[in-house]
Figure 1: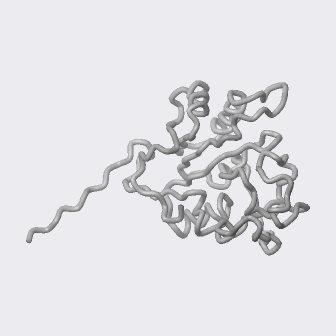
Figure 2: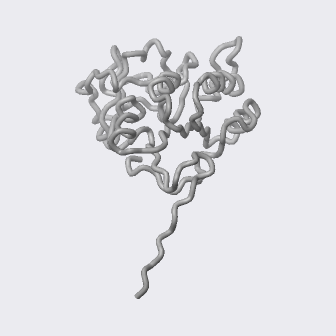
Length: 225
């Protein structure tokens, strides 16, 4: 019997990496506290991921937070009930950043499998690398890693009556942060919302690769997803 030929790798046209490419979904949502510095460092140093995948949501006051959400039922928040089922405010956009900055710690992955009424977050360690992250802080902490960024539903929210009245204004503010990121890394921006992608493309043209988040242009996702 002859030797079966093995498929050869190709170079991905977007990330310029050999395929298959290993994506770290939220940093490894089943292996580390999702969307935290701890998770993304795990993805790069342990799982050897090649692209960091993340979602971005807006807080009530319009800060861009690395978070899939919008629920916070696996996040311990200082001064807020450790039992999410008893919280009045459950979504990321119910909080200003000042209420979360250095005061919100993400639980280990097992919590996500529990019913909300069974979750007690009092034992989540108050570790610095478990804090919720602003998007601009992630850019500075991981200055070289290629990124796949998903814009979530909170981008449509009204923030104020001056310069952040809705989707286009939020896209503009987010694009300013992307533009300020130094270096030549690839940053792909996707969304499940046509409106988000259309607004992003209108603002940025072809400066950044874009697509719908259900587009599978990659071959393989991290087993941590």
